[in-house]
Image 1 (cartoon, rainbow, N blue to C red):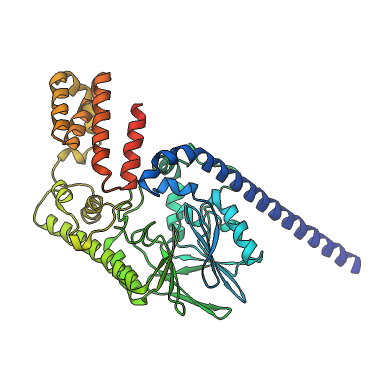
Image 2 (image 1 turned 90 degrees about the vertical axis):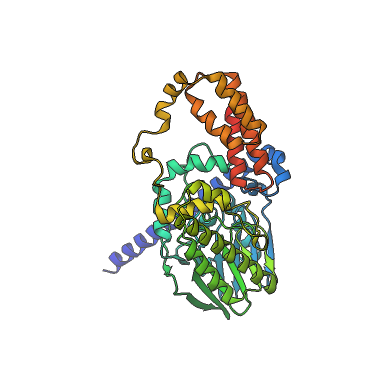
Length: 458
């Protein structure tokens, strides 16, 4: 009997050792694969970034920021990158907030552990499901850490995963360091994360660890339905994730042209009011540098809130007055006292997003919107019927009058015509004029899209 028990015990030990060895091997493979992928991405982006540095830190250029660790507040360490990762230390263990982009996460984890130690964190908090915030989760989690996220986190992961082949190619236009096809290498998977604790809207998750108090608040809005922030009430420090976007203050990305589910403006305004009531003195965002000073933070948060409310109310007023979507998009602008950077979110796009959030895609002005046959289906017919030389002359007239949007519409009608150097040159001029008009506003997404369209012509 004793011999049998010994054999069972030895088998169990062998099994545990095998599993441990397998997990250790998987961890090593994951770290190696992600580290080399990150190095390749930085190398590939160097020349592109050098050409675009005059614009500042656009979304795609964040990939080249050096990864370094800084103690941004007492016992709080920030590992920089496309998405910052934070370690909040206590005498009884550490809390990780956001885990960065998968191709940078290995270096972030290594550099953080060099300062805080190799112990598995007690808790890992994910601000939302986007790739640049969850990539390194499996590098931290050895099976004991409590994973905390919004109750909508799994649903957001689900649809982003199911639509990955579609969204991947769209994302590559705006983030050129993304590989041509989705990664399938071992260690590159950052989806399928299952939270141990799910935070509900209006029900903060509070805990204490090593004498430090923590609150995780659900803050849905401008970065999706599954956004959470981490609040340290005793220090008045807010780890905001992407709640404000990559810059603070800025007009938020109520609409994202890369393609995601509808974002709710009124929900975002309510979240802003909740954060204003906390009166933060420091904001640690998951992009770029910390923001400090309670008075300025409060003023800027109110400005963001009032700007979103203004655009929302003006859009609704335009709808009720019977104006067309195009008219409202063209005419709504932020008043001087609410002027904000539109490098991330753009007011006219927010107008369209709010309109379609309330009234969906049928605008009650073109019956053709109801049917699957698009204008593209008759472009060849248009080419046969139209006077091409007269149309090209009209395009030049629009460009001479600084009306590139009209020039673009007419050129799109001419796409059924036989490709010619003249049409290519006119489209190039049109895109360059659109880019020139877009540069003062500096919306990264618009500028990268126009750059990608110009590259196609080359």
